[in-house]
Length: 135
Ligand SMILES: Nc1nc2c([nH]c(=O)n2[C@@H]2O[C@H](COP(=O)(O)OP(=O)(O)OP(=O)(O)O)[C@@H](O)[C@H]2O)c(=O)[nH]1
Ligand SMILES: [Mg+2]
Image 1 (cartoon, rainbow, N blue to C red):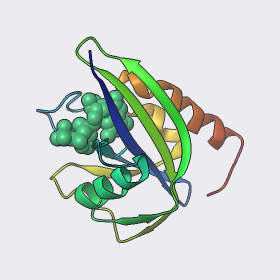
Image 2: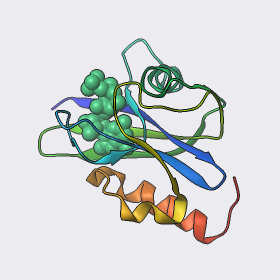
Image 3: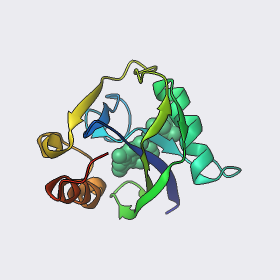
Image 4: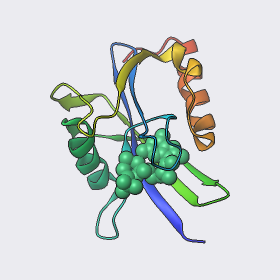
C-alpha cells in the first residue's frame, strides 16, 4: 500500500490551538483535525504546509517548527503525518472550504474527536499545557 505523506499545522495563539472539522465526504469525515494536507511529489513538507494553510484557512505562515512525525496504518490507507508548530501567521483563519474551524484551549482538546493517528500528538500537546508552557 502506498504511504500518503501529509503536512499538518498546530497553530497556537494565546494558549489556544486552531482545529478544523473534516468535511463529511472525506477520509475521517466529521473528525476534528489539524489543518493541512497531502505533500505533493515536488514539494517540501514546509512548502506543502504553507500552500495548504493558504488554500484551507487563508493565512500566510512563517517559521513552522517540526513538532512530531507519526506513521499510522489505517485499514484503508497508510499515512505519514508531519506536524509543525506554527505561532507566526498573517491573516485571520477562516474555513475557505466551508469547514468549521475553532480556537480551543489546549487543555480542552481531549474533548474533540481526532483521527486515531493523532493520539500521540494530542497527548504531547496536553503534556505541554500541563507544564504551563506559554505561546
Ligand atoms: N490534515 C490532516 N490530515 C490528517 C490528520 N490526521 C489524519 O489522520 N489525517 C489524514 O491525512 C490524510 C490527508 O489529509 P487531507 O485529506 O487533509 O489531504 P488534502 O487536504 O490534500 O485533501 P484532498 O484529499 O482533498 O486532496 C487524510 O487521510 C486524513 O484522514 C490531521 O490532523 N490533519
Ligand atoms: Mg486537508
